[in-house]
Image (cartoon, rainbow, N blue to C red):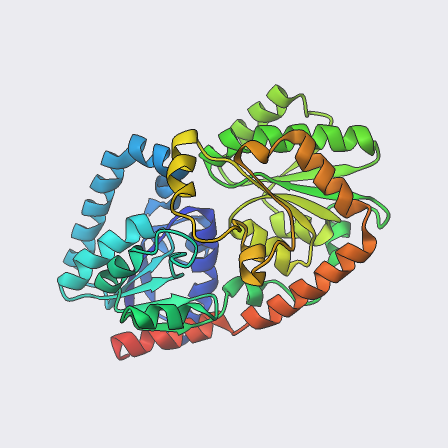
Length: 376
């Protein structure tokens, strides 16, 4: 079995790597190739180009690299059409993948899109592009297939692979031991994102918030997992923010940090869902370039940005977006969680219910759906 695949950025790379387990179980001799990151490559994926080629942050970044992305998509499409895999699976990255899928579908190749674009949150018109691009959509949230059905898009709810990968019972003691933390340490996870643009726009204020947290609680430990390829940029931000004594950095290990922490400061995105699945209280922060925000804010349908709030349809955790995301506000909101044990316990119960709702053996369910599409 041969499949084409594109997994953009760190979150898509993680989802694709989790999917590969189910694919290889059904097709042990599977050959999957295209664009992918280190996690996917560790599963035997043949990366013609690395996933970081797609790591852009908002409209402004896209404008800067637009020509190179168009060239990359054309070259990838040419190669896929030349090699003719049984199907193409586009994992997230809809602005890149949907155009590629449309071309492949027109040429007679089966196309599957994994992770429904957030048409329920903003840019709802993309559903028509989705219908023209994908033979089938694999949805990670239970309400999505019904929305797509109204637009004539075939879809299946397969659960979220992170809900399978993250244990229901958080291995807090083991994570603390692995990180060299004592049971009594008070710990805050600092996760400013996995893209260069996020480090530029978000990390400085997250780091200044860590400085304020340490000033308020000198014994507090702030742990900052660094995504692959971003250490130089993060280290520069740490020095600029005067946070060298406030944070401890690690290469990766974000799941261990989330399992071990008492609270987290998290950039909006997949990491907020990961924090929720680890049952952690969090403060969500996000900032994009001014132009990006002017465009995005006019396309929003909901008052929430973070996935935990969207899935609960209410503000269960605070969001500090754009100008509201100041070091002072981030630190104050984090301290409120640290001082509110009953609130943390109540939130953990909510997140446990969410975890169960999203757990569906995603790798197997998605593989079954893919096999049905390609009749294999």
